[in-house]
Image (cartoon, rainbow over all chains, first blue to last red; front, side, top):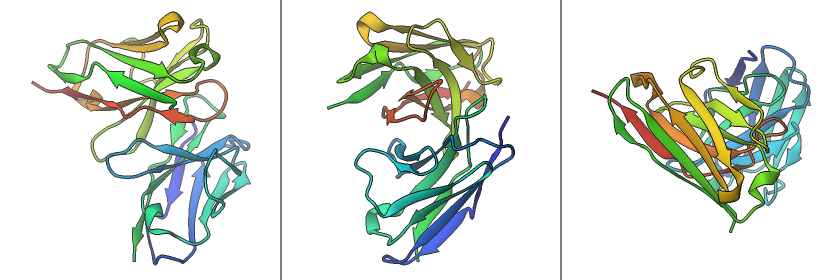
Length: 107
Length: 118
C-alpha cells in the first residue's frame, strides 16, 4: 500500500500570501496524484490531477507539481474561500490512498 | 446540473446490515467507473470500494473485504454498497464518487451517514 504523508498538518497563512503544501508517497506513484479541497460540511472537490493539471473551473492560483514520491500544491495568493483542508490522493497503486490532510487556516 | 445523490444511511447495531444507494443525474453513468469513499467523524478520507463501467471488475479495501459488496445498475443510473457485519469502526460519512480504475475522483455526492452503535 502506498502511504501518503502530508505536511505540515496545519498551515497558518494570511490572505494574499502564498501557501505551499507537501505530499510524500512511500513508493512511486508516477504522476498519478490528485489534490482535493474540502470545506467544513462539504464534499471534497477535485483541484488537481495528473500531479499538475487543474480540474475544470479551478482558478489559476492553484498549481501542482512533482512526480514519483514528492508532490507540492501551491496556492499563489490565498483568498478567503481557500481556507479549508487539502488532501492528496494517489491513483497509481491499489488500494487508492489519501494523505491525512493539511488544514490551511487564517493567520 | 451534474450531481450524485446518496441515500440509505442510518443508525445500525454492530453486526447489522445496510444498503447504500447513489443515483446519478446529468452525466452518462455507464461511461464511468464509480467508487465509495468514507470519512469517519473528524478524520480523513478512505477509499472503500470501486466498480468499473460494466460492473465486472470490483475492488475493495482490506478493511471491508468479505463484508461489503459493491454493485451497479446502469439502466437506473445507480450505484450500491451492501454493508454486512457492520462494526463500530465503520461509522462514517459515505461518499459516492465518480472514478475507479483510471484517474481521480472527479465528482462527489454529499454523502450519507452510517452510524454503528449499540
